[in-house]
Length: 627
Image (cartoon, rainbow, N blue to C red):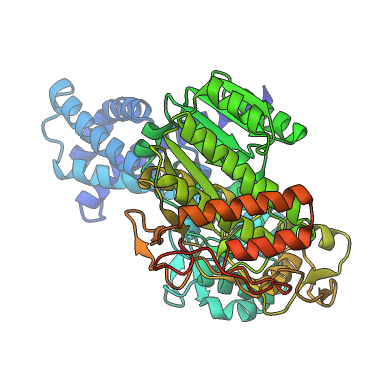
């Protein structure tokens, strides 16, 4: 109640101020009309007689035009426009009242023009002076001095928000920007220099914190900017993309800590959601590995497209429970079918496909931990190769429209069991495409940030434990993208493909794992090799220094989406594939890992493990890797 009373008192104080300004402007207009000299008595008499009408008319106009909705503390250009409109309307109204009601025909016409101009000055100037005073004097003793990195639209809006909110605890002192001239001012704050000068400017202006307000910079440019902020030895925060800020309003509350995704600087993905929606809406969709990193995000995105039924195919009980609970909370009207199944269980898969008759299958279930699978060849082959074959058979037999296999860059010139099994899965899908009405499409991409078992969560746990952070080799590189981005491109590829294609996602530039480790340590507030040690442990079994996304002979072609490319695949010898798979299956029954490895080498000619023996590859026409 005290706040309401205080607000009412403030509003009536503003009304009283404006009512005082009305006669001052009115008599000031006469004074200017007569060249700043004495006003003749006859004109002064008329001015006094007309004042009540002027007072009433202008007071009513000011009230009805919303002059008292704005708060002086936040006076801005829209308030000035409102004052100008109200002054013109008030002056015109008082002129009509004087000539028509008061019948005072000898009032100088020029006095009305001067009155309107003086009203704008007398009403506007106190408001903006008050705001300026508040902006510069109401900072508390403990306010932190903030440097805004970026003087574009986002930086300007952030500065305005900081200047308005004196309770937030931060005081902007300057901008830095490569695109602005030194000395330019925005909201009274100078552009102190360029990005490269950040460390010097921070020391010179005694900056406590940096706010990165660059929403357009991507990739290497953003990495350079973050590294410059790190060299300042001050904390820093970053704004999200403007498209993620509601109504384009940048607020101090939108600032967050820099994360590893900012260092990747991936461009926003533009999709044809209408086409994707038509491919899913009203259909039965199966997602295998539905509780995994990729599978669960696919389920989230598919759920928004309103399928008739979404089948959650998952072997892990808790993972299935978690994704089902999440989807039921956010999509209560969606028909969900949780299926606690193993892809290797052919009978259970057959019953599921016969009962649900899926239109689309997204096959994300796979074993993927490279070093672990090197000693688990039988499990990897059964799950990744023959589990895929079981699903491919069921999809073909029950007339599924689209089957999309999620593959990996490790399937290209594989040096490990995991990559070889995924390459075998690609070949199985290509082979079935030649004799099926189902569209078999493969999407191949690199690592995704934050997926289960990936390097980023491992580094974070090691940092939390005080180190060391273990990197296998100082020069090892990997491709990375975010899980949501990978899944959106998977959905787009599912509608681009006509069948038999291997699509390769644009992963950008490869990132050094050492760099990721250093940045995660810095983002945690520690110093690499000072507070947290980085230890190099040597390449693990089956691990390569760098990954490839396509074979040299695959002849990548553009598609209608700029971030999806087509690997031109050769034909597979179906008879040889059948014999090789039968032999591999027999080896799995025997359970001898070394023999399984040898048969994988025979099946995938490009598979070159350290212990590989020389063997003939699967006959493939033209392309070295048949995809």
